[in-house]
Length: 203
Image 1 (tube, rainbow, N blue to C red):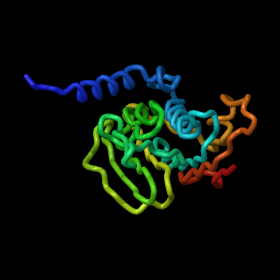
Image 2: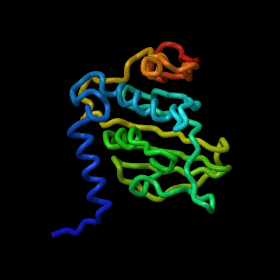
Image 3: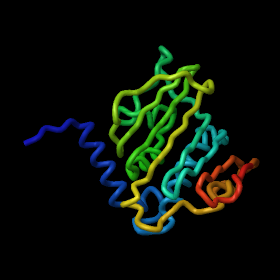
């Protein structure tokens, strides 16, 4: 009989829970044509909002019907030695000052996730298959003082044939409705790289 660590069991439990009950995380169930768009909406919301109630700076790039990238200026959490805090089950998905369930749940529905984290000129990159790191973190020169850039390749077999991220999305469709009370509605660029897409939308 195989032996499992607590961490391994927790990863399996989380991935299975997301895949069995995606509506708990993304409002719609498997088989809904809205699922890819709702996954993008949840990840964008997570990246945009700060614990103090303010909006950060994000940008979105749609690479295909079931893949997208979200870049954010969220600052990673660090310990007293200015080292990155441990991530979600050994990954870079959760190295920030608040629990970020949305990107972790999106990774659970993905065949591949690539996350880059920037901190004080240092860059860290990691690829995941589902929730499992596909190797150690790679270091590189960061393009910005701090922030993150994450690309999700959703599992096409889970999303189903014909399901796709909505076309001609605008920032208010991903965010504005839920922040009607905000004094300064957030605006951010959305670049759709799919063939036949309209010109990239911006704030």
